[in-house]
Length: 62
Image 1: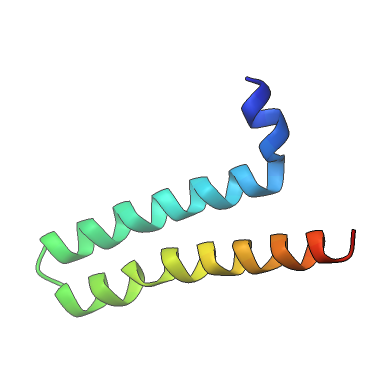
Image 2: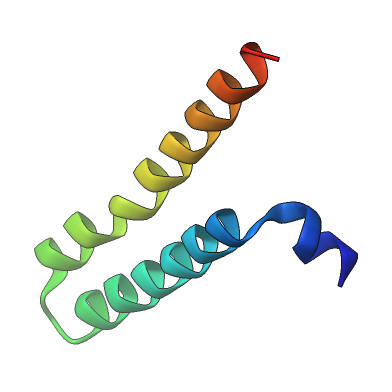
């Protein structure tokens, strides 16, 4: 439980959002809408990249 407190609410919500995005992309891909599934599937790594960038910028100022 201490890990989730250290992670922070915003980061935890972003990680949950990434998991939901991956599930939606898999659903789209497996139901035959492959192009939209691939498009939506690229949102998760983009969001994770933004999270990493913001964390690096935040730690650079300290």
